[in-house]
Structures are given as structure tokens and as C-alpha cells.
Amino acid sequence: MHMKKNLISMAAAVMIAASALSMPVLADQEKYLVLGQDLNDSEKAEVLSLLGIKDMDSVNVSYVTNQMEYEALGDYLSSDIIGTRALSSALVTSKGKGDGISVTTENITYCTPEMYQNALITAGVEDVDVKVAGPFRISGTAALVGIASIYEDMAHVDLDEERVDAANEELTATQSLGQEIGAKEASELLSTLKEQAARLGKNYSREDIQKMMEEYCREHTLTLTDDQKEMILDLIDRLSSLDIDVDSLLEQAGNIYQDLKDNVSITDKEITVDRGFFAGILEKISDFFDWLSGLLRK
Image 1 (tube, one colour):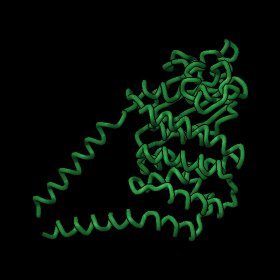
Image 2 (cartoon, helix red, strand yellow):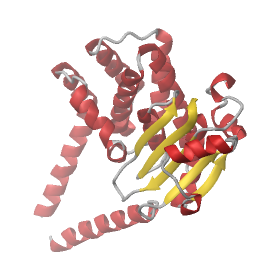
Image 3 (cartoon, helix red, strand yellow):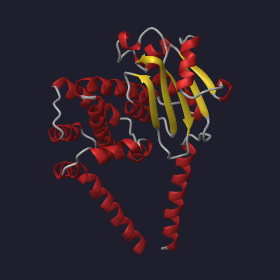
Image 4 (cartoon, one colour):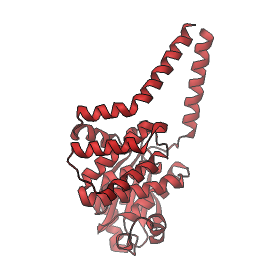
């Protein structure tokens, strides 16, 4: 029995060590600044003031171009939104492991902080404080593209291109839906469905998410068109294929999901639907622990 316990402990230790080695390690409080390349001197001064930067020599500086915006977002956004100048900028500060992503914005009209946060999590960004600013009220698309780019330098990793592209689609879909039902409502709905998809993992099905979406809309008096429903389901289908870990999702966006628990009514009826979704998962977990218990008794 002792040998079996030792083997199990060794296997667990190897898994934890392998996981740790694969995670990006950032120096705490390291600061990276990404500036829109088309800022003129007065606009740059305004952005730096909003971001609280007095000395550019104290941060790592890079630039995002309008061409980069079109390459990343051209399939999802019109030229009216992307514009002809890259202006929005961001200061990204590394945080401790498990501290999650936090976002604040100044003069950004297209993206809410929650939209940025959810998109960055999808892209694979972890444990950073992000401040996004424009010299005046602008969309903020350049900053999104720039943040993903500088994070690769910060963490010394290559973000998965599929995840980054899915993040861009997620942000634009959330914003588009937000124009119709409200930004807060759109973020809460998509965040909830994204979390459910992550929890389902390999047991994910479009039908389950559709049931959850319809139940959520009934409970929160939201009306969606057929096109909106299809857009949401297509997006969640894509996000589910990325195998986003639910623990990482909750860790990186803890404030969003805490707000959902505090502010979004979760009825007994919804919980029943959830349990129906996860019955297969819970049964497998129970079977595993029964097997493990039996093994240790031998």
C-alpha cells in the first residue's frame, strides 16, 4: 500500500512540476508600454499623463500600427471602427502568479474593461494589470492588438494564433451584442456561457449551451434575435474548442465571476439545468474517487 501511495504522490509531483515549467514567468511589477504609432506629440503627452507615466525610460516601450489593427481585426470590424490611425495605447504591468487580469480604461468608447479582460484571457494572457487610454474618445482597438503583442515579450512566450484570433472575435461579438442589449448584459451573458463551456470541457455540446442561453434569457428578460443566438452559439463553439481551463478562467477573471455571483440572479431552475449538464462529469469524478479509494485499501 505504501508503494502505491508513493507512486501516486510521485505522479502528482511530476504533473505539477511539468505544469509549472510550461507556465510563463513574469517579473512582478515589470512595466511595458505600447503606444499607438500615429499619436502626435500633444496626443502622446495626454496618453502618457492618463497612464501615469512621467518618464518613458522607466518602462519598456513598443508601438502598434494601424496595419497591425487591420491584420488582426479586419475580418471582424469595419474600417469606420478601426479608423486610419493607431492611437489607443496601454500600460501593462506584470503581477504575481494567480493575481489575474485587471483592466481600466480612459477615453475608450468601443470596449469596456470587462470586454478587454475576457478577450485577453481567451488569448492566453495571464496575471497583468492593464491600463488603456486614448488621447480623446476613441474605439480602443489598437490597444487590444498591442497588448497581446507586448505580452509575448513580457512572458517570453508565443501566444497561440488561434486563441488570439478567437479573442478578437469574442471582443467584437460582445461589443456588437452590447449595442443591442447593453454592454453589461452582453458581457454577463457571454461570460456565463463561456464559463459553462469551460466546465463542460470534452462533454461540451452546442445543444447544452443553447438550453443554458435560452434559460438565462428567460430568467433575465433578455430578447435575442435568431441571428444573435446563432452568433453567440458559433462563438461559444469556437471558444470551447480552445480547451480553456475553467480554473484559469476563474482565476484570471475573478472579479467578473464574483460580480456575476453577486449581481446576477441565479435561480433554482438554472441550477437544475446546470446539474443536468454536468451529471456525466460528476459521475466520472465520483467513479474516479471510488477507484482510488479501493486502490489504497488494497
